[in-house]
Length: 320
Ligand code: UDP
Ligand code: MG
Image (cartoon, helix red, strand yellow):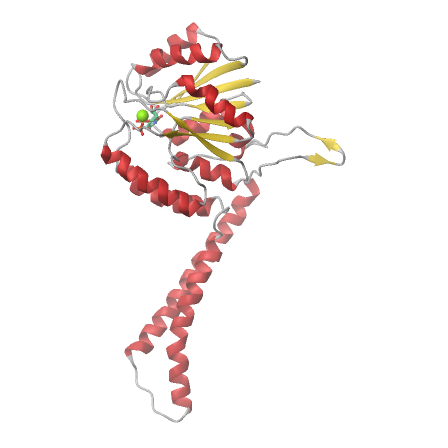
C-alpha cells in the first residue's frame, strides 16, 4: 500500500521544512510506501526554492509549480492527478494540522470509509472566521444532507477512487465531502487537533463564506447529483405560470358571462408572471442542454466493474 501526501502551498516558505520533517517522522514509522506531492500555487516568496531543496533531500518528493496563483482547489486537483498512491492524504502546509494524526485517519479508512475528513474540534482561528464557519458548516450539512461538522478542513484522507471521481475547481474544495458523498462514497470524520498558524498569514478571510454559499448552489447543479436544472427551474416556472394564469382565467369567465373588460393591475401582473415563467423554463431547458453535453465527460464512480466475466480492477480516472 502506498500513501500520497498532497500539500497545497501558497507562500509557505517558513513552514515547509518543519512540515516535511514531521511528515517524514510519521510516515517512515508506518508500514507502507509513501510519496509527497507538493503543489506550489504560484507562490511569490521562496517556496519553490525550499521545495527544490526538499526534492534534493528525498526522492519521494514530487513538486508541481503553477505559474500563478490558481487557488487551493486547483492545487488539490492537480495534486490528485499526480498522486500515485492507493490512499491520498491532503494536509495544509501551514502546520495547523498535526501529521501525527495520519494514522488516526487511516483507522477510519480501514474501518470502511472512502473519505475521512478532519474535524477541528479545538479550532485555533479568530472568531471572525470560526463563527461564519459554524454557520457555513450547518447550512452545508443541511442542504447537502452530508452530516459533517467541518467540511473545509484541509486535513483529509481519501481512497484513490474518490479523487478519481471528483473534479475540484474554483473554490469547490470546501465541498469535497459532499461531492464524494453524492458519488456514493462513504464519508466519515474524525476529530483532529488544530494549532495556531506558526508562520506566514492566512490566505483566506471571513469574506470567503459568502462565496461559499454561491459555490454550494453551483455544486448542487454542476454535479447533478443533488439537483437537475429543469427540475428546479421547471417547478419555479410552473408555479409562476399558474399564478399568472389564474387571474386571466377569472377575467375570461367574467368576459364570457357577458361583462365588459377593463385592464386591471392584476391582469398585467398575470401577463408578467406568464412571461417570466416562460423565461425561467427556457433557462432550465438551456441548462439541461448544457449538462447533457457535459454528461459525455462524466466519470462515474464504480464499485465493481465486471464485463463479460472479465474483471477489471479499474480505477476510474478523469481521462478514462
Ligand atoms: N493555499 C493555496 N492556494 C491559495 C490559498 C491557500 O494553495 O490560493 C494553501 C495554503 O498554502 C495552505 C492551505 O491552502 O497550505 C490553507 O490555506 P490557509 O492556511 O491560508 O487557510 P486557513 O487555514 O486560514 O483557512
Ligand atoms: Mg491554515
